[in-house]
Image (cartoon, rainbow, N blue to C red; front, side, top):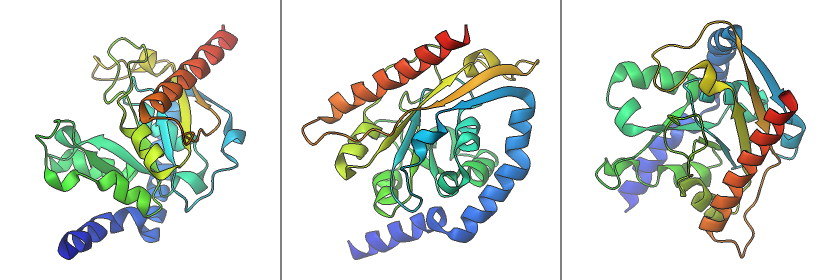
Length: 236
């Protein structure tokens, strides 16, 4: 048991390292963000809702997921004090099997592997999200589990709600609007023309003590749908 704990501590060190955080922030701000912002017309709403969040504390950021643009947009729209240490959930079976996929996602997104194989994946990934939160590393999770093939917001998997209830920490709901039109999941490359996208931050939500993970999960999804609908209507 002691050896397992030491191994887990070692495995989370990279996510907590201030030096790695500074290096990632520089790489993202100097390379990736300017590239993404140059091919899209980005509007960010609701940053004032993030003022109560403190760096160095655990929290979870969630968003609807319809495009490869989603993770870089969220990280680019977050204030740097909040994005520097955040770890992004990525599918172990997609991004952690081949080094040429693993290295860039680790560099820019501080990715941690999530097993989508329902118990058939690698044992070493289990409990990593909890360990990161326990050590003060905030997480970015897309609760739909994969990109929407229709552009509609699919049902949420319960993992992020369970973690929030377990640790009694805030969850930041984000609505991403226009990313499906800009780069649909079925396409190999984005559409040209700097299509408009909106990143909408809602107020952080904390699970009620009497609220089950299932109930909180529904509230999170309903909040993102409401943010999406309100912003989309204002834009018409």
